[in-house]
Length: 195
Image (cartoon, rainbow, N blue to C red):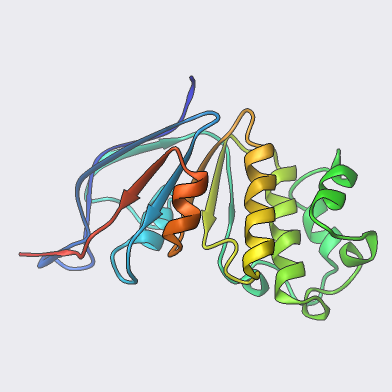
């Protein structure tokens, strides 16, 4: 299978005394889901920031194909004064959106609404819709279902699994059961190393 993400021997820390990653490697292929789990503060979100290029590793390399991401807080992912549809169309086409809209339990009216008028769960579904419409090779999910109840969490993850053809998914979650259910591999991060 084609690799969509290669992380080779990266090291990173916020100070010279504390190392969050030391010679950390990970490979993700098309059609594969890997989950990153661990308590708060172990570097789960930092790993995504490194993949997205927001932070630079001290050494090692990160290579990825085209990507999109879904963050934990959907309200931070949308500009408050533009309708949801406009913000989706800024980054991708609406090609094939009706099928996904129905699968996610969303209506056309949700897309023509300002973000703050939607519930957290509705807006997170819109965020996932936008990410899938971008047809990424790599989909980064940072606690994507935390705004949803348990039943909706499972439904949304089933939808992502159903649409995984041609892409790989890297999932951050605190939910070990969800990780074990959907992931091909679960990677447990431990506390940072103090030198």
